[in-house]
Image 1: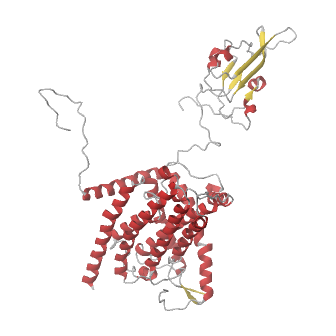
Image 2: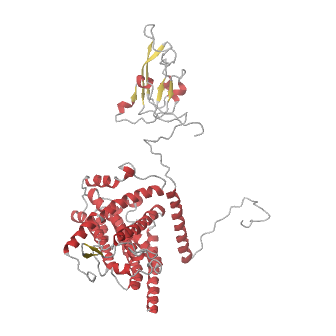
Length: 339
Length: 184
């Protein structure tokens, strides 16, 4: 499963990597959370949170503290075991997917070669989709085990939505994989040395981006949550730490998708115009590109209203899927013709 | 300009409403329209993003009120003699639609003169938790003894604290509300 990288990473490097991912990588979530609320505010001509700490910087901390000190409420109609398990599935899959995003080229740290990623899996995109598929159990079980009609409706919508959009999302990446001729994410980045895949795979990029909005349950595809008609969808009955887990997983998913878009379409740690900065700049380049995509996510959320359910399905199956398929077909023909 | 409709010599003139036709049919048009409208929406929100927020940071900044704003009541004294203007006639209580004013009058005596008239208000209470700030008391008062002030920050932790007594209404209130200037 681990890609043949041609060097050996000692066990202690792996442990340090895990710690770094948890200690640094996951700290991005509160930042995204705050950024979303601040930016949404600005998009709506208001300030957003600005009372807790300087410029509202401690708002996520206050939110988390409030959620963690709340009672773990459980409706009497819920199924206890699954009710507790579902948020855990959500958060575990999100963190697992985060592990494979490459933040830079392999570096020499203390005389050992280290890849700036949790794991370079030889099936990169498939790994993401696999965990995306399991993440959907988090939503599905959460909504179902709540024993509430609203939650159940939200979960069912989520199930249908995730299944339809995962197809297009996967197909959108196939074009890139054909061009790069590898499934390893670092390999895909290195394959973009000449030109980022956003240019030759522009339609793939568009389809992937739109499908990602649906995969992360973000506006305008947030039908699983749909505050107006479903109260809160699958997480209606969740409170306290469990709700925090769902919330955390949602924002981590946004980060993961930004990371995948950065890696696959925006050239990862590569910079255009032949600029080759020293290795320690790489993570910041990746983070900068991820911030751009995350900004786009927030921007779209501030702009577009929620789709009607049948529109969502029609759009997924009648527009995105044919586009993605056509993209794969054309790419395949071009690759065969030029090789 | 749409073609002018002419039916049997009837000419509606210039008041013809231009009918916007439905969008062109077809999936290609629909896709293009969706894309263009999405981009237009994104441009609109980005325009808002670049502008400064319009929020008034309330506890620090306050929107100034107009001079005729009807806030918390004030009772007045004569500036020269210091006597209360209120003579305890209860016209304000009679005018009050919310029935929130209670006046108990007492006779002025030469030793104990409180107001300029024959009687004075021994008890004057306004229950601000019932007051609807209509200003009828102000209109009803024949001596301009009660007026509506500008203060609107009246929340409290206890309902009984919202029953304002005569001393509280007579006291020179803390001016907590900025007044709107001419042309503001």
